[in-house]
Amino acid sequence: MRPYSLTVLPAIDRVVSTSTDMREDFGAHLQIWRLSDLALLQTIELPTTRAGDGHAHDPVAKSKAEDHHLFPGEPRTLGDGRTVLLATFTCGFYRITAIASASPRVEFLRAFGGENCAVPVLVGSMWVQTIPDEHALVTLDVSDSGRPREIGRVAFDSTFGPHWLAFDEGGSRLVVNDGKARVFLVTLDRRTGALAIDSTFRDAGATTPGVTFARESWPHGATGAAIPHGSVFARP
Image (cartoon, rainbow, N blue to C red):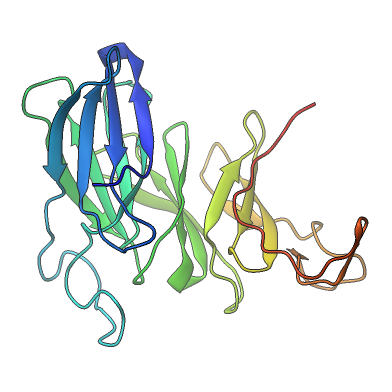
């Protein structure tokens, strides 16, 4: 069991953590801890999915069955302070409720497309999910957390698989990268959930959006290409 990511629920004195091992490719559990003393209270295996719950699997891909419960990734706490939504790296989407009780409930909600999914963000009652195999971001309305529904989508070109997301708190921008070479800015309409690529964010002289780190020369010297991965917005 290797803790991967967590979300804190101070109103109910709890922490929910996930268990993906990024080196050895295993993990299918979440754990619930008491925040006040970090005592481990429960270790829960995510419910497995059944044929038809998700999508057709590529027979040569790593995931060869209905296994959307594998590799739980990023948990996020909803505005009620008591409910957690969780995306897995095998494109499952789960809800955790009754977290302060002796019997927390974990339920499968839906699957995203593709074999591998990545980092989401939660903006109010909107969940924005990276779907690399579809070269897309999608927005889900999770105001009814048991019945998420898609309300927005934006697609990139076929060479870009979005991996990491960060949101400009107080604004409307998302920074998106593929963990390889390119970075985009995407705007989120916080009223409707619509997504749009910012066409003004581009390399000098480029005719298409996005900035590439696949370059030799930088202000600090000719040090070769860089790989953008984790990204955040910073304010002075």
